[in-house]
Image (cartoon, rainbow, N blue to C red; front, side, top):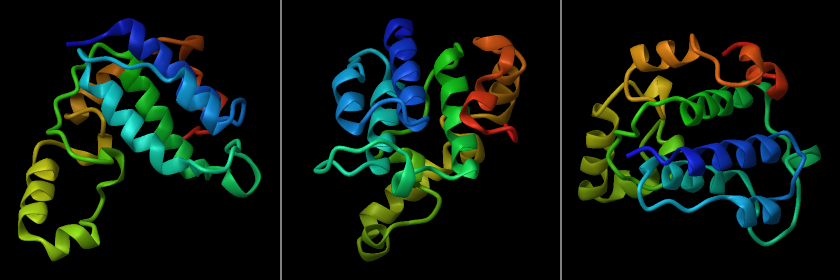
Length: 157
């Protein structure tokens, strides 16, 4: 199920965080909860990897994201503003599952779960499951006449 209110709030909070407008502590305070929309949890668990949860900081200076990574984030925002259901199997830190972790390599059950997750869809367009869904959403920009990637400095989206 899609929780549009939570998705809009999540998108705005992620956008403000990755552009250095708010601190990690503000991000945590502002990010929504949703029992109905699995995308809210998946993106929260992914963004958690981008900050130090002890020190208060913005994603600038030594914590700044690369332009290439901002392209990834722009795709997450396109997803949040789309009407696409989040259909990936539940797994921790889903946005950072390019390769199996040491844990997956050490424990066969974890590697099996990782492989099931990666086989579920086209990971190159995560959190979208299928490239067609991504292309469809990308062709229907929800904000700023399609300039969200420019706002993030992610022109390659």
